[in-house]
Amino acid sequence: MQSVLKKLRPDHWAWLHAKLAILVWAILFYIYTPYTVSNVLQYVITLLISIFTVVGILISVIGLSLALSNSISRSRHGTNLEISGLWLALTGPLVLCLAFFWIAFDENNGAFTVLASLAYAVFALLLVRLVIVMSFRKKVTL
Image (tube, rainbow, N blue to C red; front, side):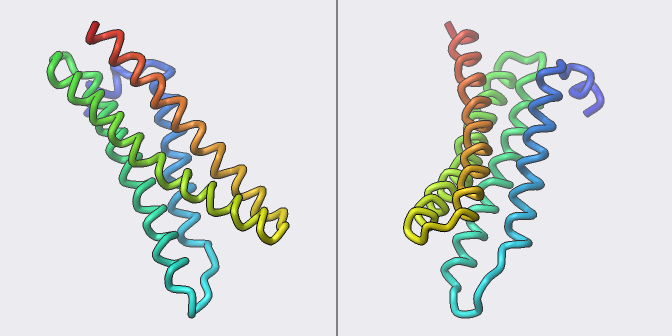
């Protein structure tokens, strides 16, 4: 583990901190979302959004650590694993963003517009990392 940490460049550290912030956001979103007793569907959707985001972030961090390996095959598998984790993590904020925008436009509620904008920012951040990793994979395999 210590050898992997030594291989991290400053941009890798920045992305690890960004992923950690998204991880904390997803967990806190699940904990502090108010639920009504009769609305089980809201609870299940919030739970799935949080699980997809947390699991995706954890998979992408494992993939990043494997991608920094000296072995070419392990590095390739790590890059693919990071891409898979990012796709999984993207689903949570995307669903949340669409749901909040739907509620905001339906009820004309500014609070949901702010929440939708935050979910969109998280989605965009993960999408930037996904594009970077996918372009790196194309460059390496050519």
